[in-house]
Image (cartoon, helix red, strand yellow):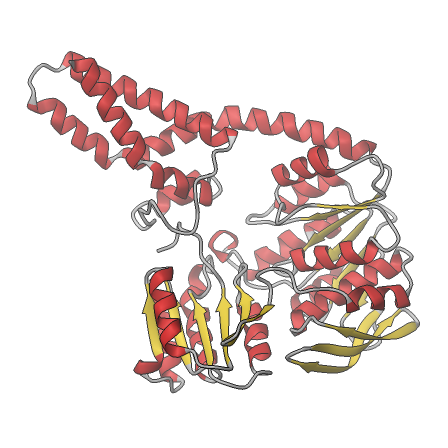
Length: 473
């Protein structure tokens, strides 16, 4: 009987721990972060995200199950007074999340050993790769720049680039082991960072000959704490560049320009008149952009479906790198003309009722400014759906408050998703003149869609700005 009770309670606790396991995975297995925010992380079975049963998750679930089963079996076998085990079960229920974190902590040495094996295997592959290696980092624009550069270089080379947003050491391992082939001539790697030293680790693995620094700003301040730490970490790309390499900088961003001035190696300036690469005679409509692209001493007229000044800066630095690697300006212009907006990055979607501007991927203040500028190109009722920005540390309220004020100057209606930034967004919008009747709150996507159906009319424009994962309330 005791064994049966132990098994039943173990299965019950394992099932109800699903949201805790999912949150830990969504937080990148950052045990200290989850512990710090354990009382505020949402307990949610459904939602947008599902638990991905990776090998790491399976190992964690097995250890967690064994620990629960052992504890439950001991309780029911050793304690004979019937009500004491029930109290023990209640205590265990209340501390389930922390028991899970304890299991994750126990597994750290084993996970580090597995990580080391994969990294050593990947480094061997990368060291044997004789082609050109390009590293891309920045606070935002990394994925877009990587995608644009890949498309341009494909006109001349066999190119491999890190898929999706694989920008961690394990992401680089997966790229090298599963995607890089012997026929590839160029490898493009996106590098992300949440702490000092993250870029240096990736650079030591890749050992690239070329690099790109995109726009740098206040991103991941939850872990970086201040902008200076962000700049210091991004500069690790320059500090670890191989001799003879060239770094391209998006100097339209003042923080990146500061790092350009600091770097003493071979470098190219983009985004400033008179630099190696810049844009002039820019004309932008809701249908696309037209401009003169200057590359070195050459220039060419470019038409593209891409809109948004930050995305055009990403195209510019990608074009500069491609030009350095031997792709001529006419070919570059031809490729740019055929570029399509990438999913969830200012992607235009036409419906019978409205135009959707999907900018739901990883929003930040500068990116949101860009999206608002794009929406201003349209006429009709303007609606924005957003949860605001996260991981902004001490500046989170301030940035979302400013965003709310920005929203009030452009949009007719604001739909706030999630509670995380509800107060900051609504207060900012109201202080800038938005009425209470224009501000709406949705807890779920179903509520969001119901509100949107009531607000939109023929010819309206709907901006989706950011989309938080389920580990945010």
